[in-house]
Image (cartoon, rainbow, N blue to C red):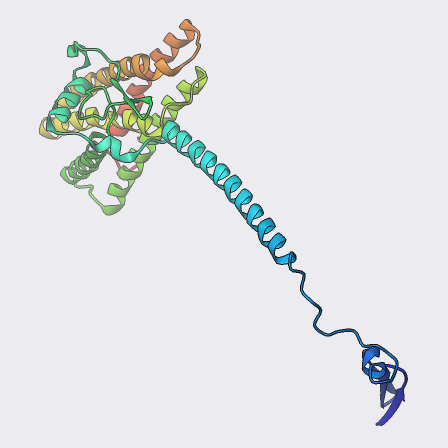
Length: 299
């Protein structure tokens, strides 16, 4: 190992040799370190005089930039938040709205679902001005407003009645009960897709999703009535099931025609009536499939 040193004006070079390998380290020092001590050579000041206007201009400029960017950012965030809130309220309403009800509303709503022929009032929803725009009144003030309390309770009752029916036949198992639960969820989703696709086919998809979920979930009310009648007397099931299918079809036709289709800007009248008829007829296979309590998916 050898050290080789070369020193020049302001430059120091160190070379290290080891096993035929050479490593070179260059150290360049400031020229003023060597020349500053010589006579006649001026040395630059280490601490230059500060500019009295520099900090003022810099502070004013940075303040203007921060203020402009802050105002622009608040404007962007404000407009984007309003856009998001408007779209959420349009397509996905506040869930609390669907649970503002009382016993009086539940009784009257069940009568409208199970006996739509006896409903003598109008089918349109009541609006009220809120925040400079029209908004629908909650279910507690409007019998035609959708809610999620009845669909959820009806769905839970459907699962309980399905398990009770399986127990009466001696076929109750946790797997069979879970199968009925999944069948009910699938039937609910199919009903939602049916109503949603009907709206899209007419050029309107602006109805809130929870409204469609609520209207689709009312089907379990009629199914529960048919299943309960079948548990009490087996032959009553064959009378109650067609009746509840017919009532649900009429209820959906009235609701879709007066409530949901009111948001459709333009549509063909013949196409409108065909879709309403299709929605009503689709309730029969759906009710029969959901009301057939068995250990299999299709039958």
